[in-house]
Image (tube, rainbow, N blue to C red; front, side, top):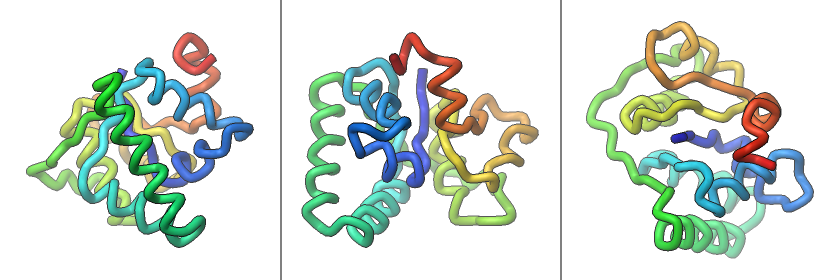
Length: 141
């Protein structure tokens, strides 16, 4: 299963005791394939650095490298088309473009701006992190 993680989920899932941690843990364990693009990585870097500092970003970047090198379940996508699914917050299209291009099953997000994706006719669907965990207990135990 391929997923794209919105920044709001990544920021919270980094904390071991957080309810969303099982999503990140599933990515590290290779039970989920995580799609990222350069635009997504830049947003992760910007937000993690602003919230927690440069050292936290470097630690997280090493985690991404670890996933890519050990489980081969981090895929880097270079979208060549802008689908323009999200009108209310165009910056979110970075995630929809990556997810659709990667053939992702889900964008895991708490952001309601992704609701138009559910009706846009693409395979990729938005899902709240708590719903994803509840529906995929075999992946996120």
